[in-house]
Image (cartoon, rainbow, N blue to C red):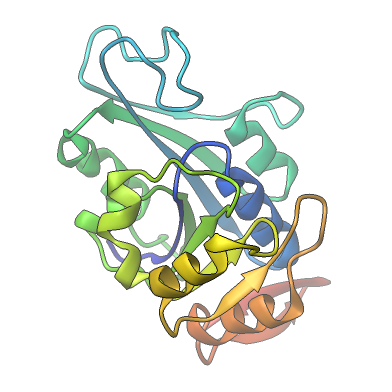
Length: 221
């Protein structure tokens, strides 16, 4: 996969992973982002919200769909509304994400003009197959559930984004979880912390320079 990849994970459902992707897209409007949401399904339960649904591909074990409606209510629609150039939804059975990777790899191939592709992917399990340039993990001290996929790759996080200030017992537990990694607090509705923006610029874009081309800023290596 030749693209530069920023992966956003989270400890569980409803801890603001999608919201964090949306805030990242809005914070870097000069970038032609490819935004991807990865969902694993199984046992008749939706991996998005835990409810019974029919989001599983009917004919194949994996499916990749491109979002076309920036005004809808789906997560990928929110990605487009936030400024992504393209938004994709990749689905696979639980434990079979490897079968879906060829579909993703094709989307991440270099552009014909040689420009670097910048992708932001919402997933924990993808860490089992790729080494992204940056991995951010959303945590909520008020949520007790913790996905095994999130716990497995916790030590690979470059930084943690807390959805509320830690308090009480979690303050001690959280310190063991995050270790010495950078921690940022961003509550719902707040903009991305400036220090987190700076970390993304430094660790994800590296020495990239923002140049003006035809009135629009574009990131180039």
